[in-house]
Amino acid sequence: MKNFKTLLFITLMSSLCLTAQNNDTKKADKHFNRLEFVKATESYNKLVEDGKADSYVYAQLAESYYNIFNTEAAERWYAKALETSSKPEMVYKYSQMLKANGKYEASNQQMDKFASMRPADIRAIAFRKNPDYLPKILQQGKKFNVQNADFNSEQSDFGGAMHEGKLYITSGRNDNRKNYGWNDQPFLDIYTLVQNSDSTYQEATLANKKINTKFHEGLVSFTPDGKTMYFSRESYFEKDYQKDSLSTARFSQIYLFKATKLGDDWDMVESLDVNSENYSVKNPSVSSDGKTLYFSSNKPGGYGDFDIYKAPINTDGTLGEAENLGQKVNTEGQEMFPFISSTNTLYFASNGHLGLGGLDVFYTRDIDGTLAPIRNVGIPVNSSADDFAFSIDEEAGTGFISSNREGGKGSDDIYNFKKLQPLCDVLISATVLDDKTRQPISGASVSLYDDEGNKVLSKMTNDEGIAEFIVECDEDSELEVLMDGFNSKKIQVKGSNEEENNVQISLEPIEVLITPIKIDLAPIFFEFDESNITAQAAFELDKLVQIMQKYPELVINATSHTDERGPESYNAGLSERRAKTTVQYVISQGIDESRISGMGKGESEPKIDCSNGCTKEQHAENRRSEFLIVSGAPMTE
Image 1 (tube, one colour):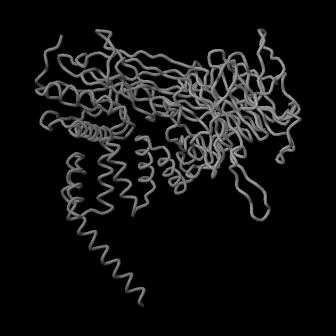
Image 2: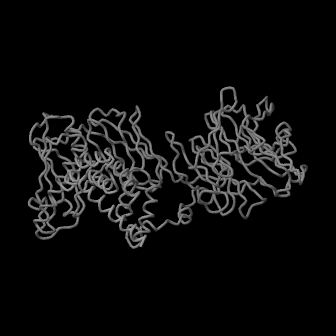
Image 3: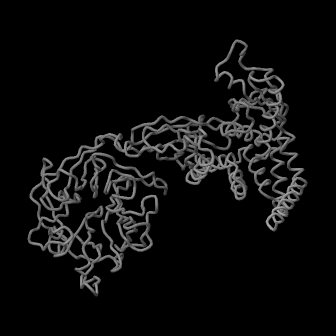
């Protein structure tokens, strides 16, 4: 009986809340039902301000903003409504708004929730189909010719850095060294090999005793002026190690050092301040301008075991504060062996990103402070074994990769490679010009869309009218260009394998859309039996808004038309709803409601006569809006 009374009390209170809600929302609901979404949002927002909002109000706000394509506001209110609601279609719309706002991870989370609610829904089924990444890596094709180097030994050999006609490698071939317990091979040393005119190499020679010690030495990297060499070495040499009190075993770290060129050899070896007895710092790589040092470290505060960092090289040769490259590069696994090339492309080895097995080589590139997507270099650089210490001369397309793959001479071997094809990222360089003057337009907004119509990134053009984007090769994309005073434009960019795709976009003055009787926008298409504003419609309507803002005396009548499918009376009502939604969108962008009206024409004025049948595309052309000038037409050339 107690439970029954509690349930009855909750039911009565819910009914009271519902009644209060209906009374409170009466004005807002009236606007909503009239398709006056701008006023509806104002009224619903007032309820929020007055503390009278609940999930119903939040949902109505979201739907209102959804219908006038205010994606950020719609996202916010869908999120609020879903705190106490779980309607599948609302979840789906929320995911779409998140996607429209570039929040793909959050969008996927909501789509996953939606798919669980409606597993038989086609949208859910499509989302559940995850791509198989292994075939994608393998199907990239062989972009490199890889050959085992002639100078490999039966021990471990890896690395490869050219400097003044010499190749610097790391090797365990020195039989005079003690063996290291990890692999029962001699401790590693740095060797040099003189390159002959036919690109072969002379016998390997040990670097001097200032560089090599009885402990491990690792990879090297050089400053552009050739006067400084960075390399790694075990901390035993610095007498820095930790001793296990029980086993008496000693545990070292790996430190970074730098040496200075004196005459024809290296001297003045110094330990770097970035070193610590509490963690290792290794795998140095100097940027082509000599201003940044990249390295890997397992210092506390990282994302995984070893992470990749970068630190500025100060004018006095010291290092500034190290910066972790973040989760786009670093994972819970290991990211090591960074190499920063002359094109500012970062190559590195990882076992945390999706690969073929063990360590694979990946790459990314910094464009305007943003890293491009992480890409797997593919076969034959990568294999099912450990592949690491990648370095490349970008101009010559040649370099070195180290691997413990089958078929080598030793435990780790160095492989020469020749680049045969561009890697999979394409740089789109978009130049925006004034169509009349042919001068670059600075400050134009350029947005990149993927082949499914999702906005990926937006940038402003620089002083030269240029905005740059990184896309995957062979992926079609679209650029949308917006600039005050000019007719906005969208252009298709065909997928390419070229490393750079230069695109020129000319913008005409906005006045080209003004005729004596109407504003000549591209057709405003609606989905079949729908009246909400789509992304395509918003793009065109924004042009109308820009013209009306520039010419404040201009008054417009928007007419909406349907195709001939469906009853005539129903189509008349549908076109009226579309006309009102169109008007509401324009008003939502700041245009006074006295300056724009709407009228539904139904199927009475088809653009294409479908009495003898029409294609799907022809029916779509009949579903349109037109914008007639009522008064205040500007004087244009």
